[in-house]
Image (cartoon, rainbow, N blue to C red; front, side):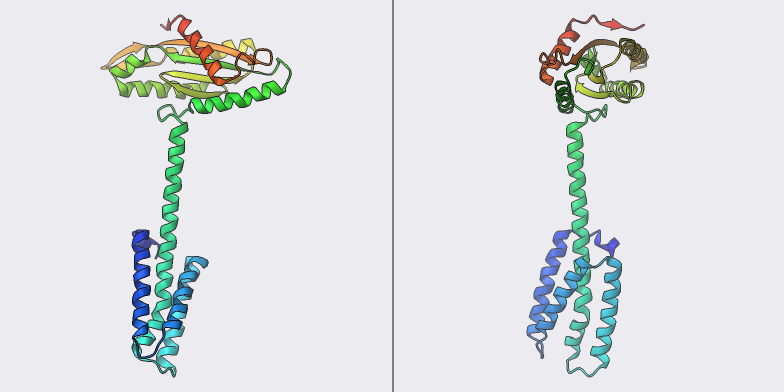
Length: 286
C-alpha cells in the first residue's frame, strides 16, 4: 500500500475521495433499501482509522472487518439485496486505503517542503563553494562575542580577528571560473585543516576569508600565521597546464575591553580590516 501511494499526487487522491463519497451517497439514495446512514458511518470510520492506526494494524483491521462483514452479510440472515451488501462490505476498507494514501502523500509533501526550506536556509547562510558561513553569520558571532567582552571588565578576555584576501582574485575568476572555484575550495579546506578547532572561519566573498580566534599569545599567533602562509604558498592556480603563483594580503586586529568601543559593530571592524588590506604589501610566495 505504501509503495503504490508514493505515485499518487495528493490533489488527485482528494478529488478521488470527494468523487467516491458523492457517488456512494447517490447510489445509496437510489437503492431498494436506504443504507446511506450505515454507509456514511463506515466512510467516517474508515477515513479516521487511517489517520489513527499505524499502517500494519490498519491493514489487519480492514481485512478482519471485511471478512467479518462478508460472513455476516453473505451467510447470515440479512434482508438486503446483493448490491447493498457488497457496498457495506467494501466501503470501510476502501476508505481506509484512500485515507492511508492521503496521509502518506501529506507526509511526503511535508518532508519535501521541509527539505526545500532547509536547503534555502543553508544556501542563504553558507557559501556553496567554500562551505563557510557568510557575512551575516560573522556579524552575529562577533556581536555575541563583543557582548561577552563588554560584560567582563578585563583585557585578558578578547578576540583576535584575522583577514586573508586573495589578491587579484577577480582576474583569475574571469580567466578560468572552474579553477577559481577549485582554488577557493582548497583554501577553505586547508583553513579548516590547519587552523585551531576553536577558531571560527567565514567567507566574506571576493576571495576574502575571516578568522575569529579567542585571544591568543604572540608565539601562537606567529605559529598559526606561518602555517597559513605555508599552505598558501603551496596553492597554485592551474590554467591550460600552466601553474600560477598566488598573492595574498593579510590584516588583523585584537578587540578587548579597552578598545571595544572602536569596534562597536561588525561593520566598523570589517572597515578597519579592509583598510589594512588596502595598505598591506602584496607578498608573492616563492
